[in-house]
Amino acid sequence: MQKFKLNHTVISFLPIVVFIPITYQLINDFHLGGLELFIDFVKSAVTPKVNKEIINISLTRLNETIIISFISWIISIIFGTIFGILTSDIFYKLIRIPIFVKYLLKFILNIIRSIHELVWCLILIQIFGINIWIGILAICFPFIAINAKVISEQLEMISVETIESITSLNGDNLSSLVTLVWSPTINIIKNFGLYRLECSIRSTAILGFFGIGGIGTSIFLSFQALNFNEMWTYLYFISFLILFSKQILQQFKLKRLNLNFSILIIFVSLIITFFSFCFLIYLLVNNYYPSNFLFSKTLFLNFFNLPENFLKSIFDTIILSVFASAIAISIPPILLLISQNKYFIITLRLIAFIFRVIPPTIIILVLLVFNQPSLSLASITLGFYNAGITFKLLNDNLSEIDRNNFIAFKSIGISNRSSWLIGLFIKQSKSYLSYCAYRSDIIIRETTIVSIVGSLGLGWQLKESLSSFAWNEVFIIVLSYSSIAIIGELINDKIKSKLI
Image (spheres, rainbow, N blue to C red):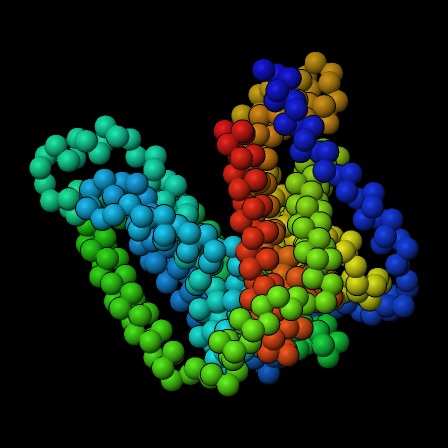
């Protein structure tokens, strides 16, 4: 059994080998042409621009960010809950609806979930034009599907005995369904759902780079003008927003819901659901531009006219996903293995937070001052961005487990590193790899972000096809993206099932 656990530990470190080809390419493409620019970028972090005008702009942009992220988060929670219940087995055991509805909904949600919010955003902008509501819809689509999947999976864990005990009371089936799913659904929302708000804020910042508004737009405009002092001010504001939202939601998470508040939640959810449907109809009727969307003519007539270098773009996207996932998996345990010094850990936590806050589009643009656009550069960018997230998870989990073994190993003369490895990390390696498998699903979808800026992969092809309104190419690229994400998710599900 100890050997099996050790294998998980080895697997956690093994992906570091991807740095061999990555480092080789980065060294070959490295130049010092942007050294002065990079120094200015770093120095500006400690000298952000602070005056009345920039604060007013920041607050206005922050307000837009809050509106986009909060509304999209609320809508995705509500509809994610609805679709999560509709795709769970317990619903069809109590409500007389043909089972094929479940599989149809799951199929549709799988496709929606496999497409990143940035892809949705770019497509919706081409169809409807730039609008703050486009950002909300773009975030809602995949987030609804992600929330539905998590809720559905958790509801499957309700035991058959519990279902039978409720139905044996001969009550109304709908009432029985609500009774069974209410408590576990609320717990899921309080644990996983609240975390999704931080994801929504980060997604809003990224979409802002493409014109939907919010503080991401100001960050990008400041970077384009090389006004780094101003850009860092915006980054500090969004950092504050993430930290503040986490503190507020943490307090909400600890509170118990009474009956009156539960009724209020249901009432507000019904209102938001109704107005969401009304708004969607309004958007389709009043803001649809058919001249920008010649779908029927171009899609079927030119379906087999593939974009140039299409197969290479698919290959680059797959390799980018693998390399970025390997970096995100291996970097956190390696850094924690180097030293357990308190100040070193604090420094790592700060660096990890910076990588979580700075949008990957900014990271890759900064790195481009030293390097040519390449697969390695995109992999480093996406890998370190996600390593900030995996580091936080691993460090938090390690701080919560019993440290008696670690202390015992140290007391008998075993080195700090070996004590940490054997006494702490081995216990967490399996659950850490399980989370990393889930994170890899997200990384596959996030390749869009860096590939659009880094001039490679399907993301760049998508941008080129959208700019020329080649909808047949857009359809093929999105279908390919979706297929890669779904296949990757199936592989990662197999990995997670082995780790349970």
